[in-house]
View 1: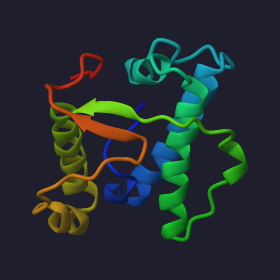
View 2 (view 1 turned 45 degrees about the vertical axis):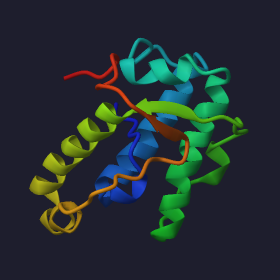
View 3 (view 1 turned 90 degrees about the vertical axis):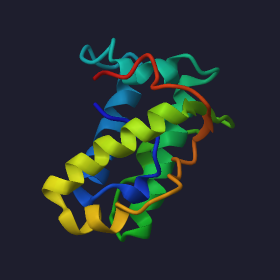
View 4 (view 1 turned 90 degrees about the horizontal axis):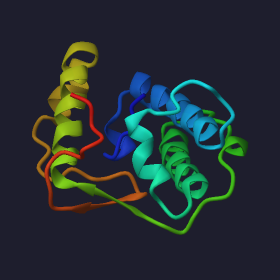
Length: 141
C-alpha cells in the first residue's frame, strides 16, 4: 500500500489508479471493515489525526480531483464526509517519495520520468503540509 504525500499530478496512470484503490482499501481498514492491512505503517498518520475517516476522505478527494482533471471516471460516491484538517509530512519523506516514484517512472513511463526529472519544488497532495525533518518513522525501506 502506498498513500503518496506528493501531489497526485506526478503519478502515471497506473500509479493514480493504484493510489485510488489503495486509499479505498485504507478507508475500509480505518473503518474496521477488513482484516487485512490493519497494522500497515502507511495508516499511522491517518490514525493519529483527530478525524481518521475525514482525513482519508480528504485524501481520496485529492485523488478524485486529479482523476477528473485527466478525464477518468472514479466514483465520487465512495469518498464520504471530509474533515477540515491537514496532516504534516516531513521534507525527508517528501524527497524519499519523489525519488521512489521517479525510480518507478524510469522503468514504466520514461517520458514522464524525463519531464519530471528537473522538478525543483515538489508539490504535495492537498491534505498535507511540509515540515522539516527526516524520512517519517513509519516509512518502510
